[in-house]
Length: 236
Image (spheres, rainbow, N blue to C red):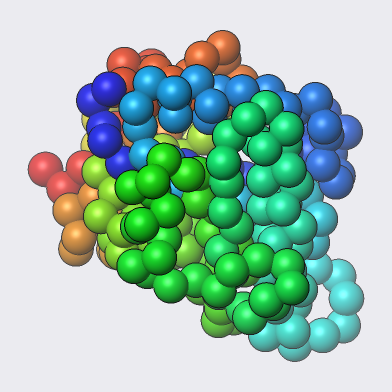
């Protein structure tokens, strides 16, 4: 495999599939099987799940302050993490969920050295509850955890989009797909790949980012091998 250790970022919407809300068990199983295939090929894999399929802190219609909504969104990522853990373990993959908010009866607290040790022992590690702080997205969580565990790359698994485009390809037929970008390109062109905090973290820590379509067969394995048809974003 091209990468020894990766951080896989999966959106909550991807877990919902066509149903648009909640967790689609067929989709969760498909994702788990792809992760298992890459894991069996020798890649150490950590995962960050979004929570938008259950609750999105930013932009919800409830009359509450932003921090309260963000904490609810963090709890949604824990639910997704537990669902993915259960699915992975049902197909024989040893998995640990680690949370940035203490809930000892549900999952392990996030401890950097323990997370790395789990990876070295061949376990999948799922990071949940974001960074434990409001006002930060799961994109930022992915960048932060990737830096902390020394991941070679962040794999951004998109739902039906095979890379980064100059505009939304679903709305603009003339949108241009980029095969390679630098982080400065992303910031200067204001491309909506990750939020700017996450992009800056990746740039400062020299972590490559690969954006690809997770709905295509075996694409997670191909991404781990550096052979996926997507967009690679790097420092230079």
